[in-house]
Length: 217
Length: 189
Image (cartoon, rainbow over all chains, first blue to last red; front, top):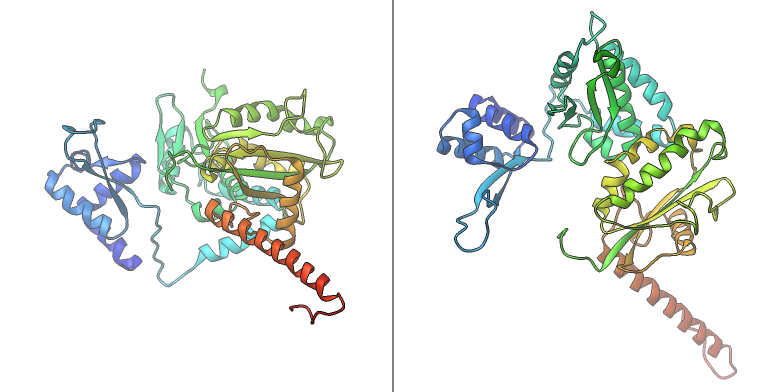
């Protein structure tokens, strides 16, 4: 299936809700759970989830959701998670990924980490918009959502991101590109009540955001 | 690959870093302060097997086999995935993000990985040989990087081929020596 056809599948609002829900969980999701979240019947959810698998947007597996195994544990349930494959369409055709890879490789070879971080910080400042500040954690989270990071706030008030928008280049040049990402978000958070820091974890973006300490009182 | 089955092979990694300043310089303090916590983090990371530590010391930063101002980092892991998670998905990434403040840029390969039999404790000499291999030939199954990696099976085949080649060379040397004798023909090309 071509990228444009796979993406067009998301035009259906139910399918879109199901995809967004599964992708946001960062783990295996069963049919019942997805149906409930999307507000549709289980059979309809199953139909759309399998369509998304067919398009390569989701991956399917099977798991005993009850955690039991052996005889009497029942048939394993079908589960879904976001696919690692990327789909992109640009009209007219553009290929910024190749350009990014080439530039990153040159910057890596030349040891330009500091220069890259300075440029990223300036870019982050430019993203703050006319008011010059993202305000509080809600404001920063809204910008992160708009930029595709898929932020999730934990009970402790720490915001982590499910999605790395720079994934392909970040996996090839982690220190360079994660350094770029942190500097970009530092620039974005400047003048706000939010502090960003590097806190990489498997399966998450390398940066965490939280309310800055000196603003807690 | 099954992550749960105990593997017959472990992954060794070795890297060198040329210091911009001696470790006791105040401008290196942030790096030095990260050594103990990051080493403790490595030791506690799932899949960690071993790291080089100088006798009587907490780490290997005093060992300088690659040059007076070159520190080394040498460890063994159960899989490439566990090493990746420590290097790039833990607090260790912070030391890499700031690498240009503390280390000179290397013109040659500064990192090498290779498969070893599980249970084998690799030596610094071995590591220097693998670094020389990747510097001479680029990434191969016997000496590679994350971006150009090989499986333990590919490495085992390459080791066998290398040993066969050495044996072949030795045999040819014998033939040549015999051919140099009075009544034999020309050596096999």
